[in-house]
Amino acid sequence: MIPRYSTAIMETIWETETKYKIWLEIEILACEAMEKIGKIPKGTSQNIRKKANFDVNKVLEIEKETKHDVIAFLTNVAEYVGKESKFIHQGMTSSDVLDTCLSVQLQNSSKILIQGLKSLLINLKKKALDYKSLITIGRSHGIHAEPTTIGLKFAYAYAEFKRNLKRLEIAQKEISICKISGPVGTYSSISPSVEAYVAKKLGLKTEDVSTQIIPRDRHAAFFSALSILAGSIDRLATEIRHLQRTEVLEAEESFGKGQKGSSAMPHKRNPVLSENLSGLSRYIRNLCQTSLENIVLWHERDISHSSAERIMCPDITIAMDFSLNRLNNVISNLIIYPKNIQYNLDKLKGLHFSQNVMLKLISKGLLREEAYGLVQHNAMKTWKNINSKSSKSFYHNLSNDKKVSSLLKNKELRSIFNNKTYLKNINVIYERIFKK
Image (cartoon, rainbow, N blue to C red):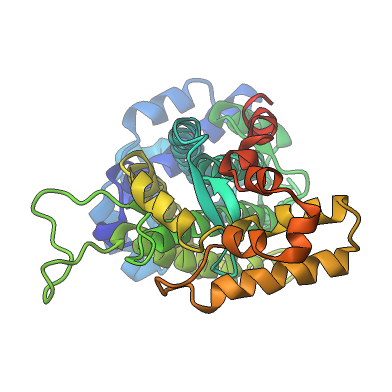
C-alpha cells in the first residue's frame, strides 16, 4: 500500500523486519518445545535465543541465490547461532513458519482494526444522541419520502458497525491459528506437542487438520468480514456525499483553514474524504475476491495463494486501518446544517404527510383505493407547480377539496400536518440499539 493511504502502526506489522522477527520467535519457541520433550539437548534453546539474529539485507541477498525465502533466512540466522543452528527448524517445513507468522500478523492487524471500530462506534453514538430529535426529510430512490431524524442516520450506522465488530471479532478468532505439523501435515517428523507449545506462547489455537498449510477458508472468512466492513464504510460515506451536495447541503465534511477544493474554482468545498473512502472500499472489496479464489489448492498444498497473499494481506489491512481512521475523523468533525434541513423538509409544501392523510381518510370509511386516489389527486396539484410561487400547499389543496372537507374538519386536517408525529416511536428504536 502506498504511504498516502497508510498508517505507521499498521505498516510496521507488515514490514520485512517484523516478519523475520516473528519467524525467528517461532523457530526459537519450537526449539524450546523440542528441548522439553528431549529432542534437543538441554540449554540449547536458551543459547539459540541469546545468539540468534538476522540481517534483513543479507537475507534478501542470500534469497537471490537460493530463490527460497525461508532457506535464506535460516542460512543467515545460522551465521549468528553457529553449530547449534542444526537444531533450528528441525522436523519443520516452510509453511509451519510462514502460515503461523501470517496468523500472528493478521491477529495483530485485527486488534488495531477492532480498536478503530470501537472508536467509530463511540463517535456514531454521540452523533446519534446529539441529533436524535432533529427531524429531516427521508428519501427513497433519492426522492422526498417521509421524515426521519438526523440522529437515526447515525443510529443505523452504529447498529451496522456493531454487527461488523462482532463479525471481525469472530474472524479474528478463526484466523488466530498455529500450524507446525511438518510436511503434508502428518506430524511424522515433529511432535504435535511442539505445535501446542508454540501456539500457546503466541496466543493462537492449533489447526485441526492442516495438510501442509492452514486451510484458506479461514483467511477467506477474515477478508470477507473486512469486505463487508468496507461496504458499510462506503454506505455511510455515500450518505455523507449525498447530504453535502449543493442542492441538499444538510451536512458537510469539515473544511480546514488553508484547504483548497479545486485547482480551477476557488469556491469549491468537495466531500473528498468521503469520496476517498468510497474508492478505498471498492479496492478492499475487490481484493477480497482473491481470498475466495485462494481456498482451492492442489492436494496437500501448492503456493498459488502465496504471491497473492503477499500483496493483499498487507494492502487490505493497511487500507482498512486508514479507512477507519479517516471515517472517525469525518464523523467526529461533521458539520450539520439545521436551517438547510428545515428548508428541505418544507420544500415540497407538506407532500410528505400524504400517507397520514390517506390513513385518516381510510379511518373515516373510505376504501384504500379511493383514499389513495383522492390524496394523490391533491398531491399532484401541489407537485405540478412545486417550484412556482403560485403553487398551493398540499394542506391548502386538501382543505379546498369538497370530498376531503366533508370527512375531515379543518382542525382535524391541520393536526395531521405536524412533523413531531414522526418522533413518537424514536425511543423504541434507540432502546433496541443502545440498550442491548
